[in-house]
Length: 144
Ligand SMILES: [Zn+2]
Image (cartoon, rainbow, N blue to C red):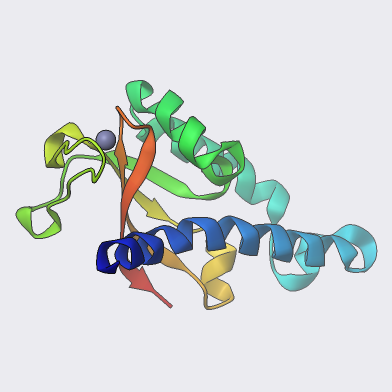
């Protein structure tokens, strides 16, 4: 039961962030003139930069797995960087197959700039199991 709650709590931001992104987008579209600029979001300037950032920082071999688990929308919106297991402090294991630390896929993420201006920015590590094709941990390191 405790493990289930822990997994639920760690996966919750993964579900909540895309919903939040969708909600704010919807709200922005309803604004007069259909412009993100009115609330300080420069969508047209920002998105191409994020895409370039993603392409440069995600390992080619990790891309199919991340696309499958996170979806294109999340990949486009967040800053993602492939990393290796940062330290023993963040030791992690897949609850289904038992795969550990360096064999898992580690990604450092940072939510888009507008989330930080709305005081809901998140930064941390997501850990994926390449065998079970799922996110096995979400380590939050910074939030505002
Ligand atoms: Zn696994």
